[in-house]
Length: 281
Length: 214
Picture 1 (tube, chains in turn brown, blue):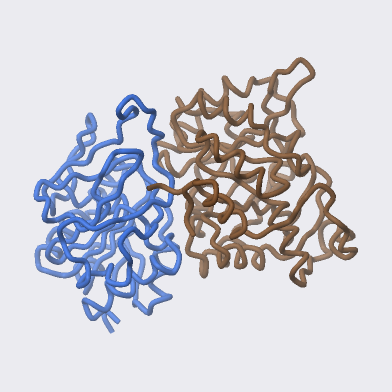
Picture 2 (cartoon, rainbow over the protein chains, first blue to last red; picture 1 turned 60 degrees about the vertical axis):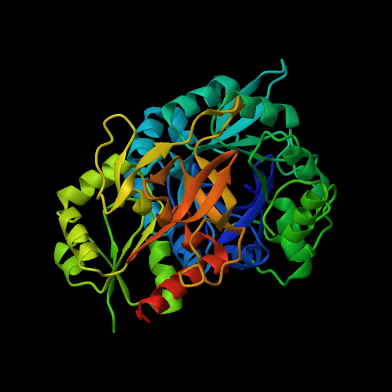
């Protein structure tokens, strides 16, 4: 039987692993390689690396981190952030990514999805949707980490992504992201029911029950998690970030985690199994 | 030292295949040169990407005939994912064309509906592999338990004409398919051993040990 996947998400800014709230206000949490190794050993089913400022500064500095990680970590690695062309995609696959994730570039040029899927196979192309719920209840897609308004309806966009041949969708609720209030179940369920490809739910996991909630609906194939696991890691380990880029205050002060109940991957998987949800242990 | 060539047809991620080889001590080189293939002691045919694109690249690089010649001469080949599919006769998909035809059989796409249930394609999941008729004790899977999870990412699967070629099967939302084959000097998996944690790495190691490559 197929297993539902637990995917730690590593947001990267320069040399650091960072974490924000609503994708903003990035705090430094430590070295990406330390987290990646820990998650691999803990039974992560896949990792996603996202260069969160790449689109903004038009750069992609992830190559070294990816090739270093892929040397010792034998699970799938998806890489996103600032990829704009077929060449960008090829380069990142060459340094060890298995799948690539597009958002801004796909919205600016939907044909890139088609072209990339044909060339690298559908299953290599993951499209991220950053959804914000507007005052009138509509969900609109944003780019550049929830900063740029596009006016595109996320449900129409999800169907188009499917038609253009992408292999998978990561749906992020920017409203829930980093808050620990739980996934936006309506959003992920609706997206998933509209498309024929696997959907990964992201944004809002504050405790392991939230993950059970989103996976028990039987509509999404995976749950993507960052804060919940990262906070466990910095609580239990000596984590040091580079002061070159970003705010290290949060890390140094060892502040509390508000709404979050940090936990390990294995805790989540045990809960899934107790709830009769298939996963890999 | 035995030299193993990871065949590069200019698509996808060969890096992790190379890392898996390095980890278990296989002397592997990534190459798209015909001469390297003709001089190899063993071949690895990896795969990510589209069948058409892959076959046309193999032809453009003049590698298809070299691979067929070497495999027919008896050297071991290890196919992975699309690399497994390329070993088969042809794809059922419209205009997809012929494969290397080293194993008789066709490549099929997962149906969108199965018994009125929606099947999400591609399959991107860890899924279990289980025994068919072949005993896998003497194959590269010797350390793998029945029903072990392996990582799959594919829209198509192979259907060998001779069912004896099937080494393992897997069930994706009700569709049972061939998830690895073992036939003479050919061993190939639909899943990605190099992405299936330490269990997957044991498959590289045992494949190399069986053929005295390390």
